[in-house]
Image 1 (spheres, rainbow, N blue to C red):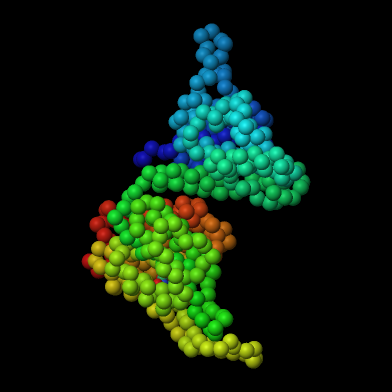
Image 2: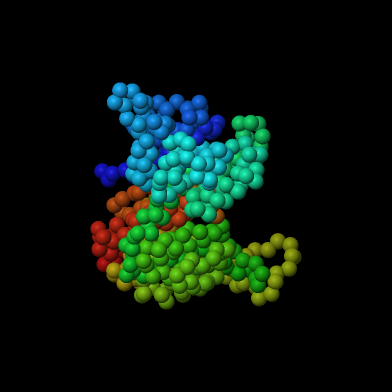
Length: 417
Ligand code: CTP
């Protein structure tokens, strides 16, 4: 088994400290090896033993070892340096107003604050505090200092706080904290990767629009965020990227060749025209399955009930799998609302693709227009689950699988050879 990545969880003294237990557990589920550092105040809320039992590691809270000063006892003043240099990331949950202030101004009066200064590892903080403290200019100024310094801030939610007030300052969902850690680490390692160098990746993104008349269209809820995240990540990893995009509100990812389209037919024409250049195709677009048979040339007036006649659009993905060069790998997407895995497997076979990313779009936390996503990466041989993460982190995981498939199967696993 691959060695798990060590992550240090700093627990500060706030009422939300108990939630750090769940964060630690979820970090383990995500494949990390969490070690816990507590402030003295945090120990008033949660017993160190709880964390020690879950992680299997000693919990550190003091700059001084327990037997310091005893016969031969050694001061463990060096331990924070060791912890700081061996960890891949420091995540503080909950980050109290006091910890944010100390981090921002470089105060180092306990293990956690000293370790922060002694570490070059990426830092994630998940603030939680009373809403007035959260909104206080001092706290906001400290956050700004940390943000400028590159610290990732997992914004708190609004909601009922322990003090009975409603407002910002409530710790973000535990899964959001874990996703932020995964993302920070993915981007740190992705920066060093160039495993897509030499590849040309054609990506489709966004939701197509089929005109009804000059001002109205049939569209869908796709935001394009997943396709754009894939394009940006593929570019970072060294690929040449052709991004065929239906309308979105997103800025063009840097370094990608953007081909703007509107309708399914325009997307089809553009995709087929550029197909021969591609070694990998990823179809993340939500393509309309129908278009209006005869769109009106003038704006339709309100005149009682109206029936729109629709006709099917071409299935671009299926055409691509037929037209591709034998060595071109094709990955499709599927948005499902029920029987997600069964429908996904059937679609994988029907479309003749090498792999299919399946999303459950029935919930609000992930999928359309959300910044987060989850799903499965299906190949004829394998099912890999992606836990909830940011779309950027999920893009990296999809590309990891694409790279793995390429290296284990040459080009592809299904379709024509
Ligand atoms: N797709 C496509 N052309 C279409 C419809 C879909 O290329 N006209 C692609 C999408 O980009 C995606 C995959 O096919 O990669 C699956 O899209 P989805 O809408 O889930 O599947 P459909 O084939 O439309 O099946 P259904 O709507 O019946 O579930």
